[in-house]
Image 1 (cartoon, rainbow, N blue to C red):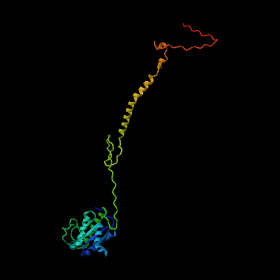
Image 2 (image 1 turned 90 degrees about the vertical axis):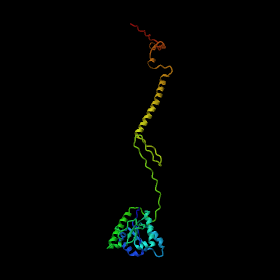
Image 3 (image 1 turned 135 degrees about the vertical axis):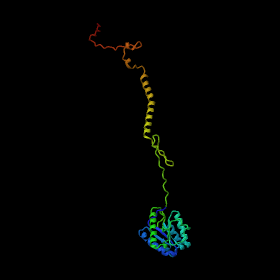
Image 4 (image 1 turned 135 degrees about the horizontal axis):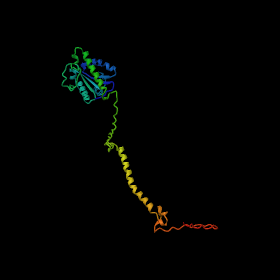
Length: 277
């Protein structure tokens, strides 16, 4: 399967005795040539003084569409048989399309191209039609359909278009798959670079709460012990109401309170103690 650029190179393979039929076919294909869809080439265009076999082989290898004008003379000629075998090799490799066209009645059923559908479609040779123009019109319409199909397939190299160097395709990374279950995380596909796991939001909040609870349970007893030591490990300092209580309130073991000394101003009578009623 190939995509041929426009115009498509068409190679016409024919026997020398079928020169007239070749010219008629080229006339019927002139509309496609004017539309810029095809370029035809045949062995009659081999330049004088050039290597005939080498040029024919090069043109065959560059063609996208190869037309075989089948007749008794074509099947009997060794040169045309070699062209047909080379064309079928490219056809089987998917590098070109081969179309046999039946010119006159002959035994072609046992040939290597017998598996291909020949033209015209009714398998009646062109020279057997009452009006050959109708036969050639049917052949031309079929070739037009093939050329339209070739425009959507892979291109083959041509003599006019240099072969572009192929570059290795970049290695495609396998896509990471995401499991949407609550406890699942995104795992990297095999053969790819490792990536951090995507955690579930609910799971992250639960982990934070657990860590906070563990910290509270660990630091709570330590804080209580520190407060206990600060309160009760002070040296000889009573706390609370016992510091303000008198000797009667402190109990038998309490130390007596010493009254504070009074100051008396000289020249003033000393106040007398009040009598109790």
